[in-house]
Image (cartoon, rainbow over all chains, first blue to last red):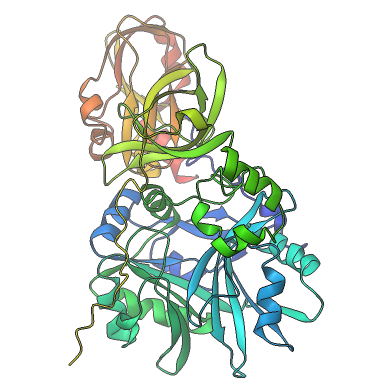
Amino acid sequence: MTDATLNPAPADLNVEDAPEGHDEPQLLPLDAWHRARGGRMVAFAGYEMPVQYEGIMAEHVWTRGNAGLFDVSHMGQLVLTAEAGIDRVTKAIELVLPGDIAGLAANRNRYSLLLNDEGGILDDLMVTRRTGPEGEDELYLVVNGATKYDDIGYLLDVLPDDVTMNLQDEQALLAVQGPKAVDALARLVPGVEALVFMTAGAFEWQGTPLWISRSGYTGEDGFEVSIPAEAAAAFADALCAEPEVKPIGLGARDSLRLEAGLPLYGHDLDPETTLVMADLGFALAKRRREAGDFVGAERILAERADGPAAKRVGLIVTGRQPVREGASVVAEDGAVIGRVTSGGFAPTLGAPIAMAYVPAALAIVGTAVRLVQRGKIHEATVAAMPFVPHRYVRQSTMTGA
Amino acid sequence: MRYFTEDHEWIDVEGSIGTVGISEYAQSQLGDIVFVDVPADGRELSKGDEAAVVESVKAASDVYSPVSGTVLEGNTALTDSPDLVNSDAEGEGWFFRITLSDESELDELMEEAAYEAFVAKL
């Protein structure tokens, strides 16, 4: 038999985007920690990363029922500041982000998209406004690992010289996700339970400063913790000593985000797709839409008015065989009319699911579509996303004394 | 008598009938198996032909026929319980049975001890 797992090939990610001299995968701060815990390491986004520990299915189910610890230290943590103040930064970056960044309140996260001149998507990212160590407000961005060096190059071109950008490569990033994440994390870091979805704050654990946001990539409640790399292993040990928490690999991270209907950059989003095509219209703020003051606005506003040619949809595949990225969406006469950009088996549903770009006329829940993978036809139905309901905590559950 | 291929299939031969599956090592590397497509009864296979497909949560893999012959039956139990391959790869998780057309092809396969040594080097 042949298989990518038995004969690992380089992942189809932008490993060539790593800085020169880093052709070999880089090691995460927790590399030894993952190996000691039985993590099976693979090359991903220019890093050696754990794809699984005990098994993708078990890890997926554990995260949905308990809490999983994910090492996402490959992602880029960027801090933007300006002598002239935060408004200088937000105004400048709004040229390439279509969200309301200037209106972002302190300690609030926002999901946004980095756009090129044609309105194509260069990356998806999280933006937070926060107060830096000197008491000045700053923007904290978390960008994808595979694209971080390209993002930095692009932002350096786009931003004026008086905006300073700092890649925090001395910081690790750990995500704790699942319905019991709050119980485990609050035992180590009291106070995190007061955060709600898409808010963040500064905390401390045994004298180590932490930046924690209530957010994630699984559809579950959970947190993302930025921590100095040298403290990450001890913190990961402490978290995994809590009965709710197990380490979770990239494999389950992918199946969890797929069930949650969350796009993966480089697969479901790329420079050829727009936020309208990707059905991420919520990332376009009303003020920005009305002003049209961002790159690619003309195309995006036209697509928004007239409808895009193709649209990202969720698919539930008939039968049991997964239909994966690269499969075609075909018309009755066999003509290729779309493509599957993510796909796999959904452990929560016990069925194969996928994301695909299809002609706008087919992008209606309940529409039957036909897929072709390795010469075999599969039937599928357009389904609402998320496939598995999100369980974000939008209001504090604290009852007060 | 049981033989193995370098592609991690096994074949158990009694007379001119062989039972084919994937090895314990292969299933452990694949992880959770969610789908198996076995060959149809009567299908003619040449040694090395793509005979079956096995899909884990991670990836799809082809299973090659270790010998030439005619498929007697596929393991229909795998349709509803593909996880049998995880729980019992070299037993209940067999893929198909085949009537061998050229028993001399078995000479090119590894016996169990040789396969174990082969896997140990991977």
